[in-house]
Length: 233
Ligand code: TMP
Image (cartoon, rainbow, N blue to C red; front, top):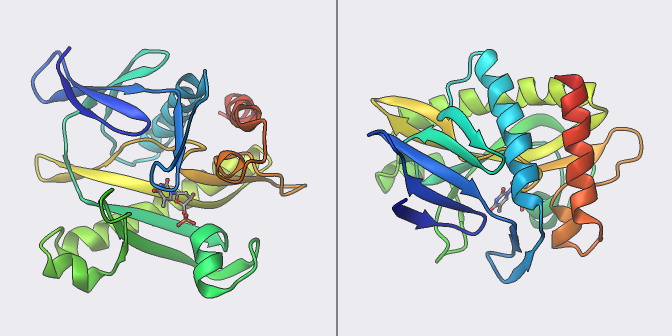
């Protein structure tokens, strides 16, 4: 298979049909823009399974995604998209960089859902960027940004409901989108690598913060998330 791109946690290959790609999940965990890096055997499989379940659930609820077919335990066939070079971050509860930047204790419920954009650039460390700056740079149009925000809020509502059924609070998450034939599609993955997920009763972290903060038993959290999702869906 022709490799198109190798990222920190996934490899993208040319697909078998025109207009398709194959994404393979890796076991590598990274944090701090790749500064902290470790192999966690089994992570790729867990993230692939979790992301596939969530993408399938979102598609059934009217969200357009790039996913065509699950190929095996760590690979999916997707539509080849022109990736929008911004990440959308959605926050329901203060945590992570938001808590640090604005001096708000982690766990503080936000009065409204926050959407943020960051420019996709490893070189620059994915800096936060606003609508005006994005349109000025020609990265996306205002109409696209409005749609990205609306779809991301719908995803937030759907995922918050799903995770609540699992006894999990959806604190925040990151989404990526791509353009295919003039349509915006949800791309990349949704997994404990890209979401903050806390146990609803105990606030125990079940996501990549276990790795970022050296809390230990990283994949036990991911396994717990998968088991609860499989029960709920
Ligand atoms: P942050 O608090 O570090 O800004 O992260 C917010 C959410 O976005 C959190 O769930 C982790 C996710 N995220 C990614 O998936 N990739 C990234 O590169 C960053 C910065 C955050």
